[in-house]
Image (cartoon, rainbow, N blue to C red; front, side, top):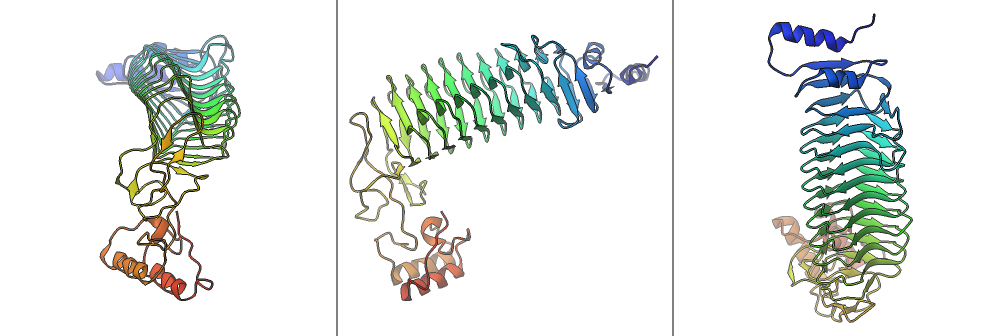
Length: 424
């Protein structure tokens, strides 16, 4: 006797003669698949609070909007089938908790031969693969939580996809894995942590991908970020890679022509970064390395770039090489670079422009803190001249202003009573 609300909406739309998309509503106890079967291309399906036990096939261009991952759960009826299988273009899925596809190789959301779809704001956990994208391009994954699977997010033969703001945690193998010619993908502002193998991995000719502003931490198996088997010409920039166990924070194996810059790589066991098994022509510069063993390179790679205007990763005005926590050289001429090259273990490679941490309050970079530095700081405050926070934010509050001038003046007169605490 109970009829779907969606049937009534479709009937009203038909009588009204409206050519536009219809809205459908699915309530607890009803079927998401039934709504999809009845809908037409471009329709919107709203799924209200409840638990839905089914495997859903999305073979039309539709928007599936759950009432929120905290109140709508879709659990696989059959663990040997994907919870959601998407085979159409321009599909949008958001606002769901998705679980129960536990058998290999099935997924919480499986996107196959589907382009320009959007998966956003879902909690996807407990599936063999939480999100599996295969032979699909130009898709967007945003603000999903993917956890407790063998794989968090897996891309194969898929290019030009954007992964932004996703959180991949506690996955048994990889948090985010790009394989088999998956190229030109952008991974930005994601977190990949607490995995058992690697946080983010690229392999088998996954080239020209960009990893920017990701956090990869506390992975316990092999490394934090892995590039392996001819993963070439990728860019890793502004990522935080810390506290990963295993071989290295960043590991390159048989991967060439990658650019690794402006990353903070700290407290990793093994090495901060390791390149081996014919990984050549990689450019590594302006990174911050603070690990028990910072780097190992068996091959032929470049560890600094031609000096350029900064600021660099430690706040000095010139970009050149990398900051090394175990570097023992000095900056004799105040240019921000160490006078002696930094030797990379494993071969004959060197960082010829290692970065030296600037001295708080040494505005001129001459190794002394005196009235000349005070005059330069006053000039900065009055005229807006740029001074790196690592040397000019004397009180460490995030701003360079008259308070820093007063503190520096006091320090020059009595360094004990007025200690410096630059914020960098």
